[in-house]
Image (cartoon, rainbow, N blue to C red; front, side, top):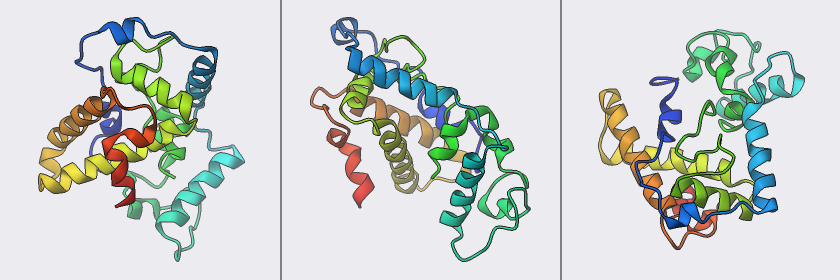
Length: 199
């Protein structure tokens, strides 16, 4: 992959926002707690190259990127053509879990900005996100796509090169935190950057 492996995890580092009453008064309903626990379970599922469903996900990733080129094997020099470091792509996301592969078709070691490892979020972007998750079980996956689109838009707007990667990442993280802190965000579609998915 281009850039450090933890680049997307860096998108979700601890929020600089101070706690406020909205966070302190936030209570997890049984429904929200169930959705959060289900997402946490997905985050704990490691990638297992011996599982057929994980192998099929890798094949699907290849086919999405190169539909007209047959994959010679799950371990193949062909993966380098996609940007993986070696012939076995699973080594690049093994520590991140299966959700990382799901969200390429790479990023679930931690989500501190959203505070998802906690019993309940303690920051406003995290509280907002859990509410979004309560409205839409696929909110995490959609947010992942939004984050990529935001980063791509920032990259192009800044005419960035590899050397500005961290700066683009910081600008993207700040924008995402800002959007997740807006008062009028009640559904994932309410995020201003949601529109980037359909341009």
